[in-house]
Length: 521
Image 1 (tube, rainbow, N blue to C red):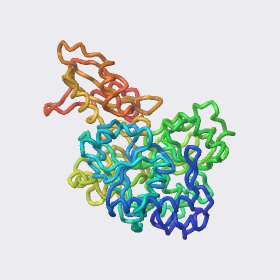
Image 2 (image 1 turned 30 degrees about the vertical axis):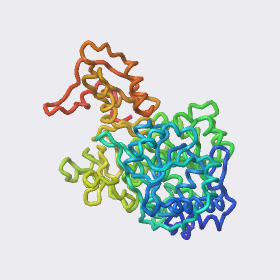
Image 3 (image 1 turned 60 degrees about the horizontal axis):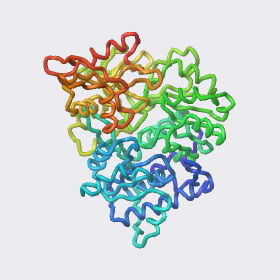
Image 4 (image 1 turned 180 degrees about the horizontal axis):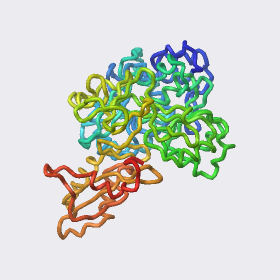
């Protein structure tokens, strides 16, 4: 890899930012929405925020929730939490008030930072007495907070094994679980690749790196950490916009980017998507959902750069499997593979009893990685069910070929991937079941050429209710984030279930997937 061994030895965000503030103080560390922080300014601001957090009475290990879009303040707060030994809990701004409340309450956050315009989402948390203290994140509010007397707590440098972020991912119970990740979770793969002299993922000091995936997702946090580790310039957008992304790539000379396949397709569909606009790109990393071969075949000549696919979970600290650039070329037999494990990471395919299966046999994918989560926050039983003897059970079904490449065939769990967003049927079913005119409901994913999958709901109305599809749509819009709202409501007379009452989702999905050669899109 191109990075120096000295930089690679730096193991925490605090060490990295301090080092780059000394070595390259005027290099932009974060650019977002026309604002920029160089490494010296990021170091200073994050130290001030860390002091203010501790001065507010927070102690190491406390949770700090952040509800907002991408901004320079968000990344400064991430670094500040690392400096103060606190744990950042990013909250997706697209969630509804009840969804935000669950995350804030479950995490036990002592402080909630809220972007301007999102205050109404949290208003109900405060009068009820169930919420934490709230602080706005506008630049003026941050300045006033930092200038207030008595805010000078001393930062406490955290260690590589200390938790730094808690990311919420939905589960089959329908309620999101807090995945606790350490600082070394963010930097382990970087070190493994350096030790093996591989450049699969190789953010460099001179790179200008586009963060396509929001910081509320493990991919966004992880990718920004790669940029900070290298001393590169991270470029973020408050919300992903294909036109703005093309402009940023062209005008700022973006050299590397991390996106989900749906974003890559939107980039290619934009009128300005030409080889000239993408001339500065040297590598695009993509993941979060399977990619359509047609999208990749379009991208290779237009973007004219290296590609690397990553596969993993929030629970594995993001990526554990990579399809390297060498396997990306028109007609490559590997393009349907997720990739192969990084050096030092293991992948196994097992049957229902946990017995390893031979090459070519489909079973559950399990990953053993030093970057895996510490735990599901305050959920020891769920943690023990997912992590067994150091192996993370992914819930995905796949197989390994004779060269150790992993191919994803289906999902053992019922998760739906909508443009890189994880959607779980049970959560949506619980919302629809609360409708007074719904007798039964089943939710599952169906193919969608734009976003990989879309949410489909089969609803059984109560007799004589007169229930209409638009009534259900409005009902869900008020209770669920937009990406979770079903794209279609199918009114039916019943929902197929097995003798124990479990919904036969595979049977429901079959009609929508029968023309596909695999059950992911």
